[in-house]
Length: 252
Image 1 (cartoon, rainbow, N blue to C red):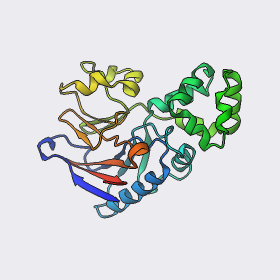
Image 2 (image 1 turned 120 degrees about the vertical axis):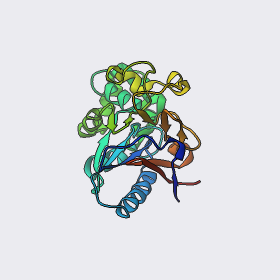
Image 3 (image 1 turned 90 degrees about the vertical axis):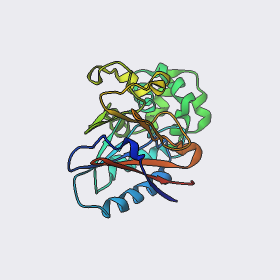
Image 4 (image 1 turned 30 degrees about the horizontal axis):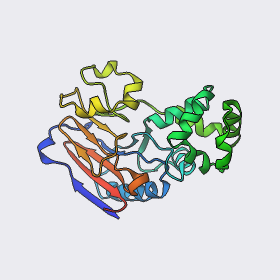
């Protein structure tokens, strides 16, 4: 189902990069069918508008929890949208997977408990094998099924994307700390202190990481994680000049 609605007019003062258009997509979490539907809607929306440089930014947590992490990675890695320049931000789930499979096998059990088991299953790994308590055997099993090219793709994700008056990150920022001095851990993991802050930051922060029933639009931040793996609803934010709007695929 398609849903497009304008952003709140009282927060229209921030502007995107001049002459450019950006679509930011919230946490996909292995929901490839919902992502395919949303990309179709975004492509249709983009085609109705004047031609200009267009950017497609994924806010992280592409993987885990949902049923099709493998398919999501392959879609972005091998068949990115042709109508936009693609940028992928590293989420906390990408961090857990990459670190677990890049020399820190002691982290694997924790990753699997937090949704990585669904990611592993999407690569055809028997779930019963994932109960192995030996981290080295687990690492061997996972690396035997998950291609290095997929791991490298996630490892190459960025921490942030700046677009005019907006800063796009996965989780948020540390209030009171200059944007140039933010830590990668905060950008991927912070929650309570950032969400509670009413401070005006150096930019309007666009983020995912924290599920809300609908878009969480505040004067200083915009949260667009509408819980695709729970609700079936995946949301994107369009920023163009001083305007913004939202597109959602899935049930209302």
